Amino acid sequence: MVRAPAAPSPGLSAPGRRVGGVSAGEVGRGTPPERSTPPERSTSEEPWPVRVVSQKVGAWIARLGWVWVDGQVAQISRRPGAATVFLTLRDPSADLSLTVTTNRDVLDAGAPELREGARVVLHAKPEFYAARGTLSLRADEIRQVGLGELLARLEKLKKLLAAEGLFDRSRKRRLPFLPGRVGLITGRASAAERDVLTNARRRWPAVDFRTVNVAVQGSAAVPDIVGALKVLDADPTVDVIVIARGGGGIEDLLPFSDEALCRAVFACRTPVVSAIGHETDAPLLDYVADVRASTPTDAAKRIVPDLTEEVRLIGQARSRLERAVRHLVDREQHRVDLLRSRPVLARPQVMVDQRAVEVTALRDRAGRCLTHRLGAADDDLRHTLARLRALSPAATLDRGYAIVQRADGHVVRAASEVAKGDPLRVRLAEGELTATVDG
Image (cartoon, rainbow, N blue to C red):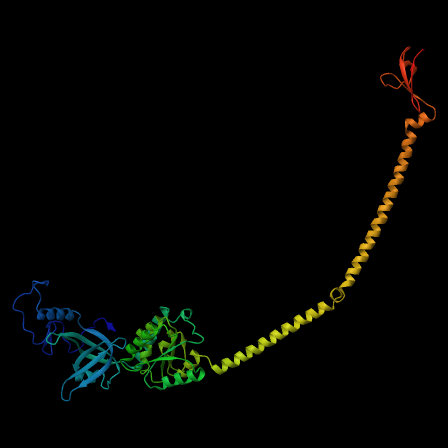
């Protein structure tokens, strides 16, 4: 963590003044001044000497000024009788460390009980030692981070990660029902490793593990866990990754609330199970992981099914399936029996006999109807013939009448229609006669 430079504390000189015999603009101790002005840019024809490169590097570093630095103490070196104390300050999220020098009085005033592994915030100025080509920090104020401040930082980081969506439930992946291989990240020969392996194999003896042992506490924990996570995530045979650790204090579990680790877990393509501490422990890793297990034993129960329970469930499913099949067969058998008991299937000739009777009745009815209609038509024909005969001219001729026609076929109805000498044709009941009008 780097903050804006603060005002120099008491005893801290302004830039340009000497502090402890070293000026702020001094590049390094024991570096002789240049005898000639080097070129502003180096070329193959005019390269810079090593001292010039060191001076320029020191000048750039000196421009940074005083800064506030947050880190974890990896090593403390107090020499008896010496006023200078050397600290190795490590970034808990990366494999990076810096040497810090300070006065014993400054350390005793700000953090008298400072131990390795503690988190500190110090006010320091970067210095580049040209003679050794090393970078260090010179601190004039050191503050040990207390538990309350650690919890406040964790709460702030928790809100930040939640706002970025790292805790979003919609992005969490479901664990496979039966993983082909389980990746386990835990401490070497730890109780957490034993609990996960023992309980998982007790539930499913054929489960396959790929275990990566890492440091789960201290300054090397986060880089080790992140590296192991990348290795397991890149393994195509690993279907789920478990990060397990036993219980401990808040300081012991701080690596599992580190921002770099949370982001590494969020970027994993493989589902991750967090099994850190006990039920009451809740590091930030629990919120980012796809599944949160209260203990390592609980993680073993979540990653693999219980063989005994699955066999029991399979037996129950087979029983239910057998009952369902039997019920279906009985129901269909009952339907078949009902169908067979119907007359149409029990005595199918009855239906044929009924249809035969109906066909015979219809045929007789059709015969009677046709006979009746033919008789009626015959009567109508005879009556019509009788009327026709009654009205026919031939019947009139049979009674002795004759039909007189002129030569043009016109029937003579009056004497005035003919003249003397006109030829006539007389039609009788049998034959015809020709005649001439005499008068």
